[in-house]
Structures are given as structure tokens and as C-alpha cells.
Length: 145
DNA sequence: TAGGCCATCTGGTCCT
DNA sequence: AGGACCAGATGGCCTA
Image (cartoon, rainbow, N blue to C red):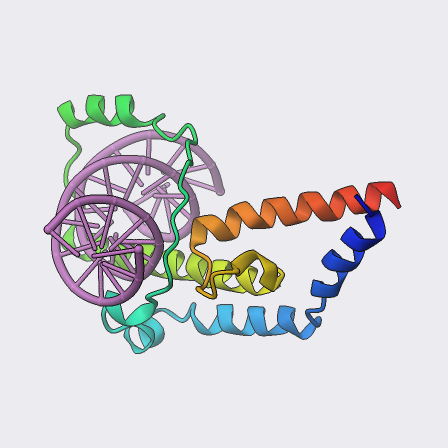
């Protein structure tokens, strides 16, 4: 396989300006002002995004480390959080997940269009997987240069 | 209609 | 004590 071709392919799509970083930071900031932004951005879950779908999910991380702990913990109940504290925690969690989603959306913009051939936007998982692949390709390229 | 994706809520642990 | 993080549950939307 011709390395120059590969290089051109990758580098051609590596055309996002630095301003993307600025934009990213601005939007992250704007989405992190708690009360004000919380429902202006998404008054309901469905309003937020409904991105395209194309599953390919053979994702098997070792994610079950807590199952044993939690089942044990169920037996020894902690006193419940106060409603106020629970609500605050929910808000924070919502913001945290939104900034995560926002970051993923931005990350998606950095991937070459080749990765979304279907014309539909990449899912979160696809974005992560393709990003890994993309970085691998770039590293490979650099190491051979 | 089933299945995938997503946002949100919740209760748990860990850390400061 | 309270914030951050995590994972399971839930319900809505969308597409094949």
C-alpha cells in the first residue's frame, strides 16, 4: 500500500482550524452555567439530539466491577439523601453528561468525513472507536516519517 | 414492532 | 459533608 496515498488521505481531512478549539471551549463554558442553561438547551430529553443510528456494537469493556459491591450495599442501606441534595446531584449529573455529549459532538467534527459514509452522524460509540482508529493511523504515519 | 441510541434520574462508591 | 464519577433503570424517538 502506498504510504503517500495514505498520508494524503489522512492529512487532507486534517483540515480543521485552530478556531475549533476556541469554539469548543466557548460552547463548553456556555453549557456549564447551571440553572440558566439547564432547560434552555434541552427542555426535554427528546429535544436535545436525535442523531442517526448505525449500530455495530461489539463493545465489551469490563464494566461490571461494581455489581458485587452494589448488591452487598443494598443490604446495608445508607440513609437516603435529602430531596434537596438529590436534586442538586441530579442537576450536576445532567450537566456532566451534557458536557460529555458536547465533547463527543466536537470530537466527531474532528474526524474525517470518510468515517461517516452513511451520511448519518456517528453515534457516540462510533465516534470513540473511530477516533482511536484515526489516532492510530496518524501515529503510524508519524512513526514512519 | 423490535432494537438501537440517547438523556435523565437515581443510588451507590470514592475522594477532598 | 458534599462533589465527582459510575452503572443500572427508564422512557422517548427513530429507523429498518
